[in-house]
Amino acid sequence: MKKSLLVLSGVLAISTALAGCGKSDDNAAATAKAGSTAAATTAAKAPVTIKVQAWYTEAQGNWNATVEAYNKTHPNVKVVYESMSEKGDSQEGMKKLDLLAASGEQMDVVMYASASDFAQRVGAGILEPLDAYLKKDNIVVKDEYKIDPIVNGKYYALPGKMIEWFVLLNKDKLDAAKLPVPTEWTWNDYAEYAKKLTSGEGAAKQYGSYFHTWKDYAILGLNNDMENPYLVKSDGTENIDNPKVRFSLNLRNQMENIDKTSVPYFEVVSQKMAYRDVFYGGKTAMLATGNWMVGELAQNAKFNTVFAPYPKYDAKDPNGLTEVGADFMGVAANSKNKQAAYDFVKWYTTEGIQTQGLFFSGWKKADINANVEAILKSGKPETVAKIDKASLLSTLKVNKATKLVVPPTYALQQEKEYTTQVELFLTGKQDLEKTISTAKAKIEDIRKSNAK
Image 1 (cartoon, rainbow, N blue to C red):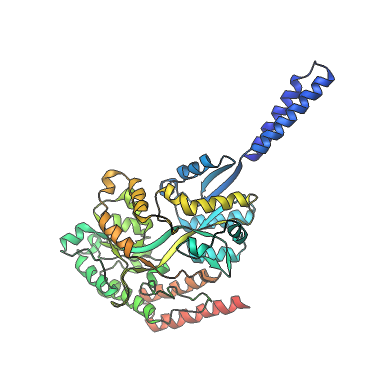
Image 2: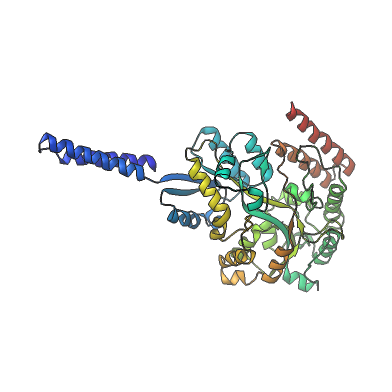
């Protein structure tokens, strides 16, 4: 854009100079000088173009309207959004961002979908430290935002949408089973609900529960641990030789392979199931998931849906403890317009998400009721009517985010090794003790090799 405007300015200057031909040399020189001044002024006023690059499709993110709102109030900047995935797949999108970084293509504002993905890119030098910008604006991140994405004492991103987890339930199936909407429950209660919500056989079977392939579903009981809710600690040492991890794996095995009330892991992988489709299609009555699904339900709800808090590990635990995550939005280290990119990041992570109207904000000053209203307003009336607003609001208001663990830059390697061992356990290829001991050893090996 900037290059095009400069070329256009040059063409205008030449045209102006040529228009003076046939007059005196003095007049021609004066005309040429005036043209050059006009060209320089035009170039000086040319808006800076910055790119926002992430995996969301337009339908998922309402990005065109969001950046347009910013552009209207910031005439010196033109923000454009580029989707890195036609399917809205975060992993595909982040791989394309890595390729852009490696090839030296223009990057300004970038986003990553998890703390592990974010930490890895910090380690790769893809992100610019934001501390100087934040200091200039007198922003104390932990005072301004609900989560604190600090890495080794520095800030490389601010939290975009904030992710808290809860359980979606098919209200029609709950009513058929004569079960109340849970307002406080444990994972053992969840397992009992799953038994009562499971029916049918074979291809027509409808399960009470569904767990996806992500590592989040392999540490269910650990996810709502207030201090150490992740499979490694912030220093990279393992956290899986932990009663809550053992409980989580035993729960999965009991529900999937013994009670047969949750979709078996083998089916999830072999059929390449998508969790949205499983829930929308009525294959499961319950789905533990993140709050991004509220915006998706506003667009796609197929039946009456209610919400319950994330289940507790122990009945004595506080109600509503939930794992927390975010989209980590930062400035590319190779951006040529870092100040403009940072300014957009600051706006989007505060006012912008509310303008976008699809996600929940990590900004402490955001109003949760207004946030919900904006999200529901984005959907069609007939689909929004299927969302139970009362249970949604009550769940959101009891939610209590656990500590955000930004793990070491090599954490994705550790996650991969852990989930590989979990797969062997859930498919009956090794027992629980072998799973724990092998995962421990591999996670520690990765930490030690990266410490050299």
